[in-house]
Length: 96
Image 1 (tube, rainbow, N blue to C red):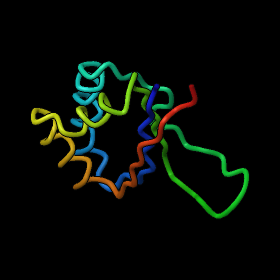
Image 2 (cartoon, helix red, strand yellow; image 1 turned 180 degrees about the vertical axis):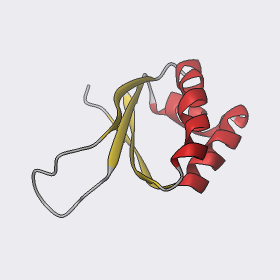
Image 3 (tube, rainbow, N blue to C red; image 1 turned 90 degrees about the horizontal axis):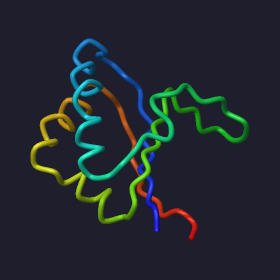
Image 4 (cartoon, rainbow, N blue to C red; image 1 turned 120 degrees about the vertical axis):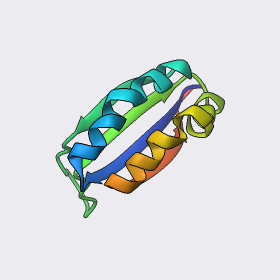
């Protein structure tokens, strides 16, 4: 069953964040992931959720998504994202 990482984030230091943008795709691909939504500015249709930017990444399984997040070689990039953004990340399973 496919799994999706959904990231809601606000960038505070775009210049430093560029390294993350440039390098993280190879780790997503390494774990068989692909972008569904890539840093888009959403349009709020209902409620009071007001994310600045959203990313949705599809993986073939929850295990692939977790392996991506735990990849030792990607940890320095995640540290850049944590330092340069305010972000919220969730993992959800897709439908059969």
